[in-house]
Length: 335
Image (cartoon, rainbow, N blue to C red; front, side, top):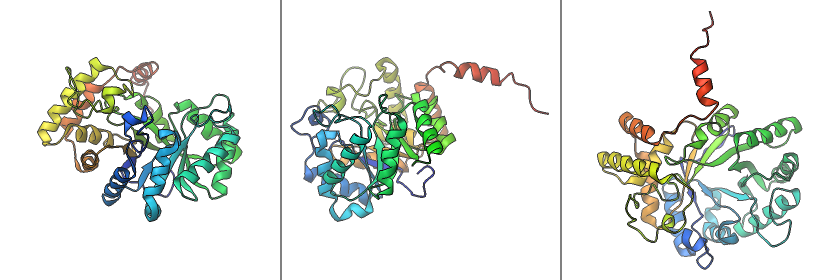
């Protein structure tokens, strides 16, 4: 995982479907109870998954509570990751990345997860009101106290990540080991700056929503959905360009037919094959969904498959990428 000495499974289990049965929008996302969550955790661990990801905000804390209960003695076999940032109370300081909230949020997550430490503690977004040095100092304290093993960040722009990394280096504070970002055939934005930054800085990349919130699951076509209970049917997140994505879905179906597998397996295999991707986080409501997702690690896409998927999902280079690429072709070679 990045510059650390630990190894993570190529596919990680996302626990966002745990809890929230009576709390919209989490009831749409999953709403799974302890029994259903326990079955998914067992299935994932038996398949070799060793990283489970959650966040304090999922189902307003109930997700962490369920995960803490169902792990039990299996906690030692798991690299447990959670996140902080979102509002978790009505007070003016019950959110963000201040030292006050980092400390409180961490203690609350430890209690809900029934553990004495978190293996990967991640900030869930960027807080423009709190100096990065304050956040890093609080996280550094948590690591030195033994309550956190590694720290990471989610949903940061490349410049924001570099601001944190620079402060870590100058102040001698704990450094982010990973980034958690959205990446799929339907959303390739991170290829421009975020993935190159991670490669340059030896930051692990953990991918969330590789199926674009179910849009690339094979349940949707240009005319309808075959599953009215699907999350994407009720919650249009993450946003996608539907006109462009229908062509991607058509291509996925063609590649899947050639390999005699399901559409989601191909979509996941494409992400797994991308340079710089450390692990892909997948969630599920049902065991058969998770089984299909886990099988993606064994699907090797042919050059033709990758070329077709790359072409249909390609987006124009933004400035200054197109300018730098053109200029590079005109640079004189060193003698």
